Length: 134
Image (tube, rainbow, N blue to C red; front, side, top):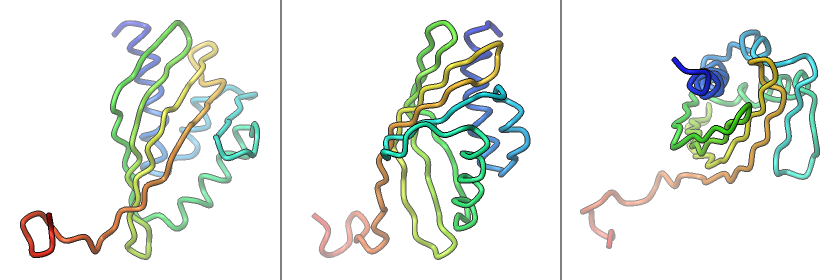
């Protein structure tokens, strides 16, 4: 595996740990001063604060799964397009379409930026070929 593949794999590995709610491993993949930013207007967040937020969010999530659409790397930076598929404990589903940026320092994540859009999935839409479907 090349160093470029290692960083791309590390970015995916971080997300896979959230799928299984392994917060200790997620945290171990980050520097002590890592920060996270989202396009929600809340500004930068220390990684430990972000971990607590992820734990709170996961409390209402039955399953979550990431599909990585594409990745690009330039030096210590990885940019990827992804879709997070969520099924909530109430049965509702949504997809979170996102571009996520990772900056690494010494092989550890030092910065995460996520630009996202949540798309609720309408469970009541007719299936293809059923009456009322065009």
